[in-house]
Image 1 (cartoon, rainbow, N blue to C red):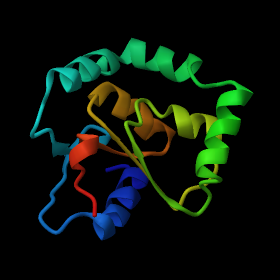
Image 2 (cartoon, rainbow, N blue to C red):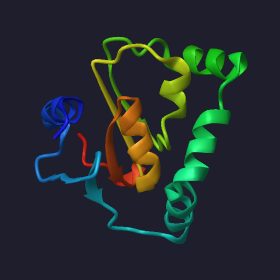
Image 3 (cartoon, rainbow, N blue to C red):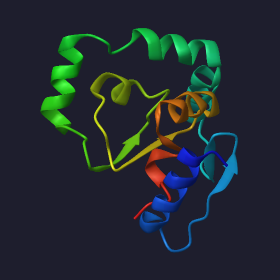
Image 4 (tube, rainbow, N blue to C red):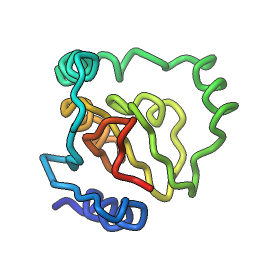
Length: 134
């Protein structure tokens, strides 16, 4: 396990629900999708396509207006524990930057999670409505 993924996994244990478990899959962890709806399937299909997810990461949410709105809403992520629900390939962190103490990305699309992990997320496949976190 690469050092970055191992460190994220060690830190994530502090905020998991008591009965939650994570299984490693590539550069992300799986919590499971117990209630897989048509909407979740459609999202996972689109953002699971590595080319489409990469294009989304490269071109969406990269302007100063987007960054200023997220900074106003979330503030600086430096030294915070951040759980980015619906993180996709990592657009918000790629735009905001900072140095979070722990950066967790939750999404339903494995392809997006692989990209988010490369940006520094501890990536977790899970439904945002049913995360494994307390």
